[in-house]
Image (cartoon, rainbow, N blue to C red; front, side, top):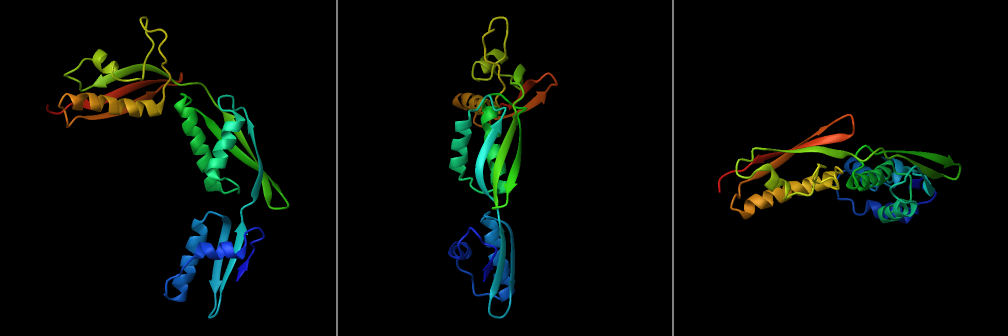
Length: 229
């Protein structure tokens, strides 16, 4: 017996429960509760029972009418709309909203915006629907001040710098793109390892550390254990 589902059909709720194993009724009740919570369709779920019935009381998430964005200069509104459609974000589920914000963080970080802050708020209406507002504080692009290599006895710094894509500006390289991008740093780690492995150093291990400065610049340390050839 299902109560509180104004917008979700009984059959949908039952389909989420699916098959329940032939165990004691308390265990069955707990399984029903877990399955409905795991669906992430409902704000709250309560399951009780007697000898003949399960009683399911649910409170649904508000449906989302519209999304509104403020101060998002780097990413266009329509691009955010496309991400929302891909995530199938139709209800005000906190976990799904957080997934959206995580995806937006990744996009901003891929451009070098590592201090991005995104807050959301909702305006709720009596028909169990909401408008969602995303407020962006993009910050400034983080720049790489210096790149260091530690533990590299076989190859000097200039050779290793030529194998990676993270760059610093210098007198001889004033047009270098020195934006700090965490995904590029992870790729650089792989590039250094592959360079060593191609020369027979199969046990090479590379890690990195990043030191952040208050002027929105970073210093990168590649920690290399070359191993034996």
